[in-house]
Image 1 (spheres, protein in one colour):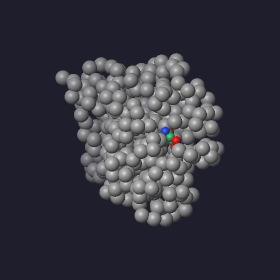
Image 2 (cartoon, protein in one colour):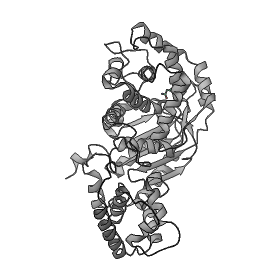
Image 3 (spheres, rainbow, N blue to C red):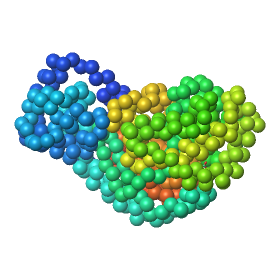
Image 4 (cartoon, rainbow, N blue to C red):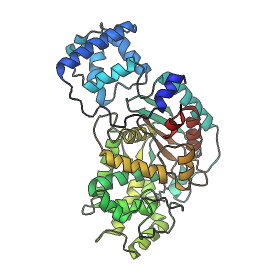
Length: 426
Ligand code: GLN
C-alpha cells in the first residue's frame, strides 16, 4: 500500500455514521451533479456504463438497497454521462449516493484502492487456508459434524464495497458470535442502567462457561455464557419464546442488511440435550438472585440456545460487523439499527471480552473489536472503515478459529487498522 493510502487509513477519522442525514437542498445537489459529471469526464469516464464499471472496480456493490436509485440511473445501455441521465431515469439520487460517487472519483472510499486491497486479502486468505491446526468443537455433538476444511471470508466497507472469498455464502450457526447482537438488543429494549444492573462489563479472565460471578453476584460481561443468558432474559420477557426468537432473528437480519437469518433446528436440539453446564450457570445466577425480578429462567436459557442456533453466512455477518463499524447504521440499507451509544458499548465489550481468554492478547496485537464462536465464526469490526467475517471450524485451545486469528494478525501487519495505529504514525 502506498504512503498516502497508509496515512489515510491511519488517520483518526470522525466516527459519525455516514449518510445518515441526507437533507441537502436540490439546487446545491444539481450543481454537485454537474461538477461530478465534469470530474468524471476529466478522468476519462464519459458514459453511465463507464461510471458503473469504475464503481464496481472500486468494489462498490450497486445492488445494495441504499444505491437502488443510482443503479437504476446507471443501468442499461451506455449513455453520455450528464446530470440529466439521473433525472431521465426517474431515479432519485440521494445525497448519500452522490457523495459516494464523489469519493469514488477522488480515491476516497472507505477502502481506497480496492483492487490492491482485495488481492492482498485473497493472499492472506490463501495463506490462512494452509493452516490445518486446530479441531472442530465436539461438546455440542451436532457441531462435531462440521466440515473442518470449510473456509469463508467476507468484507463489507462503510461505502458498500464488498468482497467474498471461499465459502462466504454458506450459512453457519452463529453460536457466541450472536452475543454482541443480543447485548445490543437488550440495551435497546431496557436501557444501559437496567442491563448493567444485571450484567457486568469486566473481562472474567476465565473460560466462557466458567461457573463464576463477579463480586456483585452478576455475570462478568455479556460476551460469556452467563452474561449472554442474562441478556436473553431481558429481551421481551413477557412474550412467548418463539416470538422472542423471531424478534432477535429480525434484529440480526436488519443488522445484516436484510440477509437471510435462519435457524438450525438440529444444533438447537443438540444443545438442549447437552445443556448441563449452561443449566448450572442459570442455577448459580438464580441462587444469587442475579436475574431481574420475576424472570423465567428456563425461557431465558431456551432463548439463549435458540439465538446461538441462528444462522448467517459470512456475507451477512460482515454487514452486521460493518453496521457496528458505522455507529449503528447499516451500510447496505442506510437504516439505523441501533443508537450510536449502544454501538459504542457493544464495541467496547467486544474489544475487551470478545475473544475468550485471548481477548487481552487480541486487543494488544490486533487491536480491533471482534467476537468469535465455537462453530468457527468470527466477526471483526474496523471502526469507521469496514466489517469482516470469517468462518472456519478449526478451533484453537481458547476456542477461537485458528485461521481467523492467523488472518487477523497478518491483516494488522499489512494495514494500520489497529485502533491505536494512528498514535504511532508520524
Ligand atoms: N452455545 C454455546 C454454549 O452455550 C456457545 C458457546 C460459544 O460459542 N462459545 O456453550
